[in-house]
Amino acid sequence: GNSVTQMEGPVTLSEEAFLTINCTYTATGYPSLFWYVQYPGEGLQLLLKATKADDKGSNKGFEATYRKETTSFHLEKGSVQVSDSAVYFCALQYNFNKFYFGSGTKLNVKP
Amino acid sequence: DVKVTQSSRYLVKRTGEKVFLECVQDMDHENMFWYRQDPGLGLRLIYFSYDVKMKEKGDIPEGYSVSREKKERFSLILESASTNQTSMYLCASPPLGGKGWNEQFFGPGTRLTVL
Image 1 (cartoon, rainbow over the protein chains, first blue to last red):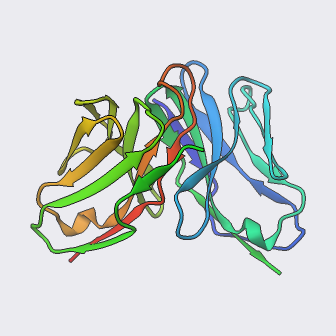
Image 2: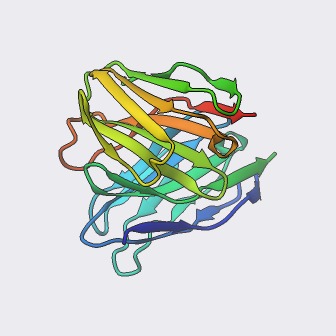
Image 3: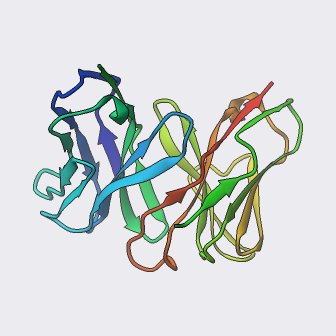
């Protein structure tokens, strides 16, 4: 079946540190991949997406590359800020109504 | 911008009560979804609807029902609330008609506590 596995948190970093949040997936066919972010007290917002192998999604300094050979979609940012503190969800879409979410990774960025 | 709103941010109910959670989207979308979010489990799909009066069960429909009488409104109903339904409930709606790949637009969530 289809599933998403992401690293457990919380991840605690100092401001300006490099961030990696690992995400791997299991899917039949060719899913689309997403990263969503949830700030405290809010719903999820789309952060970035990639629809085919080798695509790179990017937004607000975050990047992730769709790696079919390793079935991965790791989230990276070169220099995190306190305002990046949130919960990050990796997700895949297999069909128009089939979304699969990871369990979420909480990021804490300290000044 | 697409806007998805939910009727309550916080709700406290008692065991056995009938609970209604309302979700409204303002962009004439066909598809709407209800998820629950629990720590360590991510988001799990309860029900989704792809048109007025059309619905399909998601992964965890037990104890829930839904209603879609108008295109913009999708209601989640807990027929008899139980403590294990204490959770964050998220409504979502994609920006297109459901064809091809879509990102989800989420409401702010309703945190439900059942005592």
